[in-house]
Length: 216
Image (cartoon, rainbow, N blue to C red; front, side):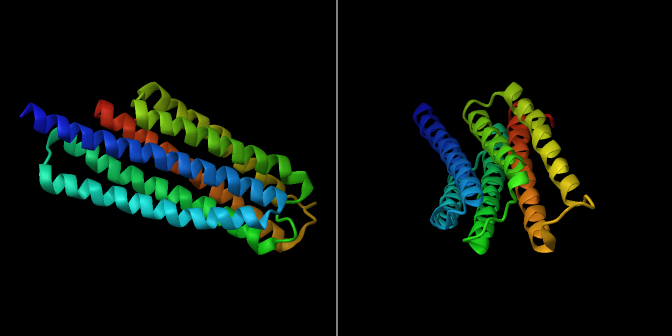
């Protein structure tokens, strides 16, 4: 019985590590997508778009392993909750990869021109940096199940929300001079970054619930 339990725990640990690895992948994707949109680097944008397919494959593989464990082990209580939570976190991470993909697609669409006017470069830079910081912290939360850090991620999301509001505020000013097309691009970019961070918050909340049995 102890051996069976040890094997099962190894499988759970492997799922957790796969989620941490996925977190690293989506963090790099958003970092690269931000670089691509700011530097008009179409090659880097294409790499992000290609990486999204690998993220999808990793997430599908992780889901398949979780379902296999549930079918074989028929876990109950906290073990079942951990596996169901892992399924949901994998879905959040896959969506984060999609959002980095969307940022990269705008960079590719506007190449060789820039989608971001000079006066908004710092705002997009800050949004990209905030996204990566939040994701990296989320990876630590998954690995350690640190509930205090999980709550920090939600507070860190306030920075992204503030940046998003600043961006929208600039876009609706009567003095806006860059046209509708650029305004649409930036509205979408702001939404992609804001939603990306929301998914990271969702993951951290799931970890908090997994550990405490309560919603943050």
